Length: 173
Ligand code: AMP
Image 1 (tube, helix red, strand yellow):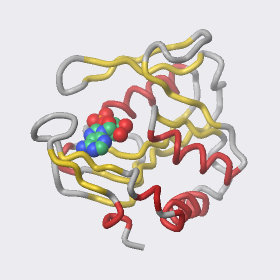
Image 2: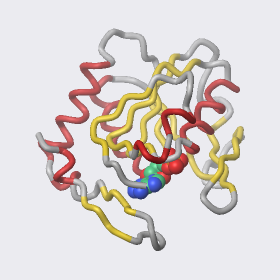
Image 3: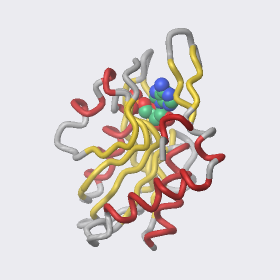
Image 4: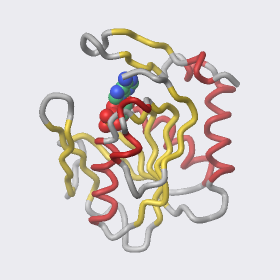
């Protein structure tokens, strides 16, 4: 299926110069959603992954479906202040300033083998911060999977050392 054709480009959102890749249009096509989740399920069917960690917020949609399909636990990596119990935090860079990702301190344990899921890889800052949190809890990042990659933004290089798997590339910044 041509997944790229189902992703809407919204120019100048949330600010001028950004080409926003909107996956909500893809989600209107259940066959496309199923193809993504079933493809990942097959890719990770060797039993190596023990936990999925999904990125706030669109990562929850794909990560949640995959966790259900695979019968795996899912951990929510959330933006600062959203998780109710004790958390650990990692800061990451935005275009202007910084932001913070958190997970519950008891969400992962030593030896867990993690697949990180998000909708889109841009600069890689978000998932780099999540990988830091995974390692702080003595778990291992096996791979990070995304629906979309924007190669000109250099996310793969930023995630050096973490295998990255993506399905659709757009050569935009
Ligand atoms: P980054 O940390 O730069 O890799 O940014 C990734 C996060 O920001 C993901 O959770 C995406 O949903 C969101 N994001 C960044 N840039 C875009 C874009 N051009 N279109 C859609 N989402 C984006």
